[in-house]
Image (cartoon, rainbow, N blue to C red):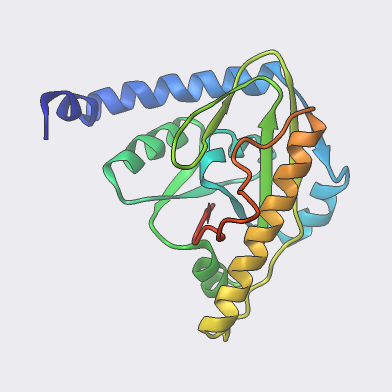
Length: 204
C-alpha cells in the first residue's frame, strides 16, 4: 500500500474526514426544501417500524434525510477499508453502522419489512463512479420518495429470496425516477433498458 493510501486510511484522517462529511450533509439537509411522497408515507410506515431502508448504492450519502428525528437508525456498511470511512461519517450523524449483511437476508432473519427509499436534490454533484453516486448541494429543492414495503418470509427459499430482491430493485428504480422528476431532473444512474439488471444493487 502506498504512502498516500496509508495516510488516507489512518484512523485520525478518517475521523476528521467523516466529521467534515457529516457536517456538510447537515448543511445540505437544512438548506434544501424537501417534499415527501406519498404525503402520508410516515403515517403508513410508522406502525411497521423498525423497517429496513433500501437504496441504490450511489445514493447512500443522503439516505438518512428520510429518517424522522425520533427514529433510531442503523446502516449496513461493507467490511472494506472504504466502508470504515462511511461508518465514521454515519456515527457523526447519529446512525449506527452494521458491517456486511445483505438486506433480503436481514429482512428474512429479522422479520422486518424492506422499504425502498429515494432522496435526491435539484442541485447536486453527480460523480462518474461505478455506482453513479450523487451528493446534494445546499440551497435547492429536494424530494424524499418512499416505496411499498417488501416483506420476506422466514421460510423463503433461494428462488423466493431472489424474487424479493428483484422486487426491491424494481421499486428502487420506480421511486428514483419519481424523485428525480419531482425536482425537475433525470436520474443520472438510470440503467439502460437493454442492459442486464444489477445484482445486489441495494443496501440499507
